[in-house]
Length: 357
Image 1: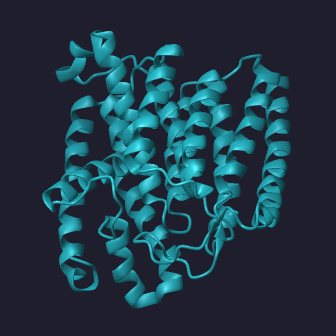
Image 2: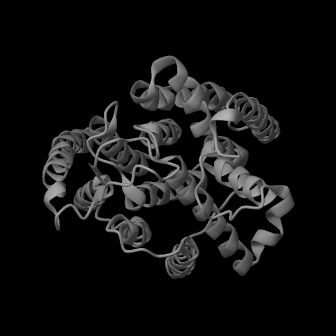
């Protein structure tokens, strides 16, 4: 009982501190090196703002995360090295672009792969209890397991970066994912991870206050990489602690982040485009074009985020009731792929005259 009171006290203090971290970051980041972090590129495919906005959200998230890791250490006397090393290294890869030091997408991907492979092996990150039968024997090989974990990180981190283009879209999506993970861990009495997940949800809510419905700050690549890596670690540790939950359930939970990257990669190759360069034909951009016809450009920005996440909730939340049934989760996951493709084709046809072919 005493430990619960201490945790609640820390969470209350942390919520207040996180709000002020974002407030101070938003207020003073405009002055950094004469607007070094300001996003003034209004012509890129994924731009939906019409005034300079600071890409300092990732910096505020990093400070808040490291602060909460310190709180976690004070309570549980454990240092979360995985979150510190992986999240920080990916943050700085994204931060290079945020401060306008231009590196090619290929170079950025190579840097990401290098750091991930190094820390996956250095920290001995494992994935246990996988019920992916077709991969089970392969995953007994250490090299293949490392590559599998690497791919998991790459899909989720790049998926987070890919959908981070509308006010609140990524933050709302990660709040949903982390809330489901929190529910699973609380239900099974994994209190330490539940405490850490609650801290991350507080960070995301604080971010939402400054990014939704009107954006005062953007996450930037640094922020999306940071948050993508933390949610990937959250899922890995939740999977390891809860062997009764099907691996396909976690595939369902991460479906939007994962499949957005996978589908985009295949689509661009089919269209004879570079799969690493941005365009304006992602699902969330197509839905925005239809929604903005009704609500206008400004309102359409955040309404699109609400709409996509409501659909996401409707598609993934029912799977909580059969999370321990691998067969049903498997069919549900492949049904989501079919639903995504049908929706995408429909939206693409409806907006074909509005996008660059």
